[in-house]
Length: 470
Image (cartoon, rainbow, N blue to C red):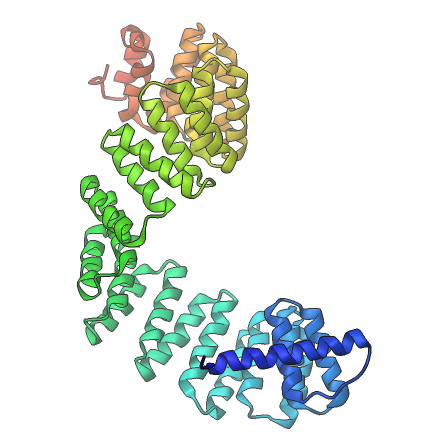
């Protein structure tokens, strides 16, 4: 079998590592070339054994105290260990001997980026560009350094600089990826369009453009981009998957199912695809088919909470709450801080008569997300159903301490206080609700229709100039 260059390098490194570790076990001392020491250090770095990497570099420096390559390797180990000041000491020592070495300058610039010294980093990078042989590679390296430390705007600047000089496809992708990560999807789309104008048959560019258009809430444009990607490269299954997702956004569920089926045929189907298909069948009202696909998803990935939750919904919609309960519990077990799952589980626990467990869940939910209106309203309604008006009122007053501008709370409190015989307080709550959102006064009558007959309630609403909903 022919051995590729990288395979040979890997075998050579393994040979040196084995020999070095045998030496350590025997407590002897052997001779290694500096390049071998660097390869052994790289091996330990790649396996996140930074202590061993530093030890082998120090071993090498004991034999070659003035070897600049080992000083640089020592600095690299310090960088990986986030000991940036120590790395800088080694690099500045090396720079005294090789002031125009681009590798030293790049590493020094990286240290400054890690320490948020951007002006110093820029000086190092500019100097490296002046003295390096392959300008394109250096520009990529600079961009990647900023990426590694999550400075995506700066990384995008350098990748765009590279685009101006080289028009390399990879530079477009890297720059667009940076803009994607900082949420500037339009800028990413503009760059991809620029690449497509240069190379209209670039399937990857069309695919990435579709992703950006989807994030810009332009699903129809995204579908067209995915279609063009597939016209160029028909086996681009991930484009089909994302096209189906866009069809779902447009409520074109039957079309989406057809496209997901193509993905399954091409790729064999994964848990997310089957789960998405279950969601389509759910929206189409086909609970049996939805459940079948959610089950397929859960068999492939038993830790996919969305699949278990979907199965629960399919049973609940068929009026089998007891069967649904176990699936909702499994979903919450897998994602204990998922607000929607907690809310639905609390509601079904209450419906099945376990009011104590329901209240525990509501408490968890309100602690987790104090601004979640549905949780407070459902919790107060559960107390109301248990004939505990004071507790229902208490819950909504607590909710108002987190969101005092929620008109839904005031409309519900109006009904509670009215039923509790506190007409003036009910009218005060009604007035507060009407000031915030008079158009939603129907919420009051949906909850308690007989209030429409009360003269004081009618008068208060009419004073806001709208009696059409009474």
